[in-house]
Image 1 (cartoon, rainbow, N blue to C red):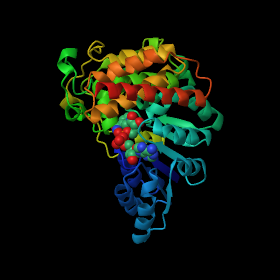
Image 2 (image 1 turned 90 degrees about the horizontal axis):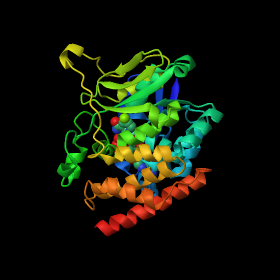
Image 3 (image 1 turned 60 degrees about the vertical axis):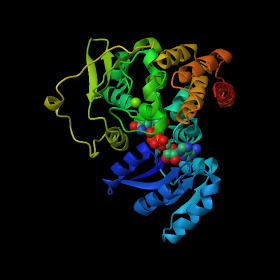
Length: 388
Ligand code: NAD
Ligand code: MG
């Protein structure tokens, strides 16, 4: 029996993870559920999944969570805050952690799971972008198994089952749907709204990653993620826009073979791989009907209309604190865009200006990276204030 902690339980990935868990009562159990601030949604999940522990990040929600659990007659223990979450993730309450908190807020609990040697189903890509080397080192030292829960990286993981395959890897072909604005030129993007940006044509996801998909920053973050997970530099990662979102990524080997993983765009497949690996377990996702889909198209990304992808490649090659700065400035910019304080094209502009203001320094410790993150947030927030 896997005892699972679902971090970000009320979100899009959390919901999919709990759906897969509920399909396998004989082998998976949700023991810890954690969310940011939505107490009502967390309580509802506790009624359904009866975990041993529930954690709300926002201290203001603690009393309502505790009282709601009592009123529902549940023995689930209520907790609040990041320290309580890290302790639960590190301890005996779970052996498997679904890291699906959005943004740099997920770093501490993700690192705790890696350090404690858990099976880590890693959706929180921002923690890899911010502190990828430290996170991979912690996982290695702690004996953690990381299964990436980003559809592309999960595809690559499936195509690279062992060290022999890894040794023969030539390059990675990372697919991108292109987002809701695929095919538009830069000039056509000045007036787009948050509603248009989050209306993803293929995937149903949380608001932040949906905007990242619209700017192609999501693909940029994923390039950096792939670098850390698979030890491949940026010049061996090619991004391909693939609008059908059926080929989740490909790997090319030195012998000329290319392997791909295909499937419907539904994150439950990746999560089932994470829970079951190396076994295969049912996810609730149907197989692909290739005749019904008919064709697979591929095209190059438009870096003029979507400069965030270029900025991410540049930050990866600069190394050090640059990816942390890129990520932090992007989080501030996306949040401001969702609040209608800045326009869509201000997102890449703000990220680029923040990177220019904070030249990369060596990422010698977590403290250095957290400081770069904080400085970038300050500079980006000032720039948002100046835009508004
Ligand atoms: P979401 O916005 O739907 O959910 C985010 C979750 O994080 C919520 O449960 C929220 O309560 C929780 N949360 C936020 N701040 C928190 C904090 N400080 N402490 C504890 N919990 C907190 O987001 P999502 O789409 O599920 O994405 C989650 C992560 O997975 C992101 O890093 C995203 O990039 C990654 N991811 C998502 C998808 C997808 O299909 N949705 C695909 C690949 C990767
Ligand atoms: Mg992805």
